[in-house]
Image (cartoon, rainbow, N blue to C red; front, side, top):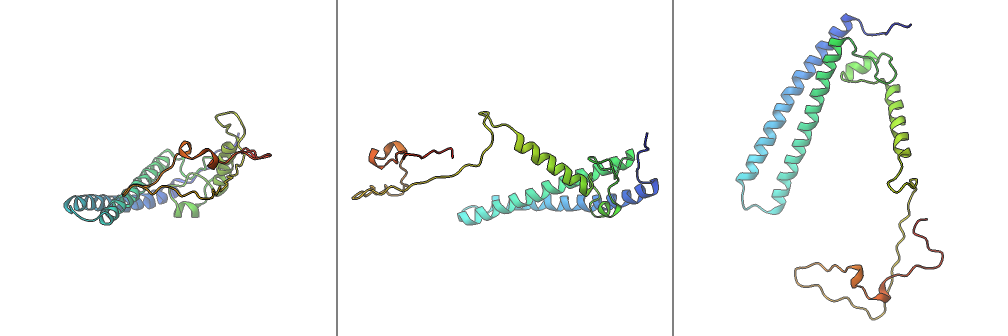
Length: 190
């Protein structure tokens, strides 16, 4: 029976200091982002009567700040999980291959749970799973083609749209001679 290889307690202490430092900075960044979201949200409520582009810009900014805060919270959670792995003495062991993650990789990405090789294996497995998932109707996944055909009718002028409304024609509203018919040899499943 082979002995599980892990980082020494001294190495784990070094990683712990690195992670705690990154965690402190990440928490400060999250607080800053959350304050920016609150400020942007309150300023958008105070500015009534602005034009739509101003409103859109404010909403886009708030959404971007929210996304950044969400990503930062995920990063913090991953760092906390890394601290738990240090405490359990499983830190730095690849969850796919069982090999040690290189120290260089852990210094750059201290919350890493996979070696580079393990990450590539994981990607290959997930891609293989996705391609083997059967479709709802049971047929295998096939590449589809989009086939379009323009039909021009002489002396046809569409009616003008009502003022302020877009013109939308449903398929049933088109005259029968404007609806394309299937041609010989045409198969939409090709």
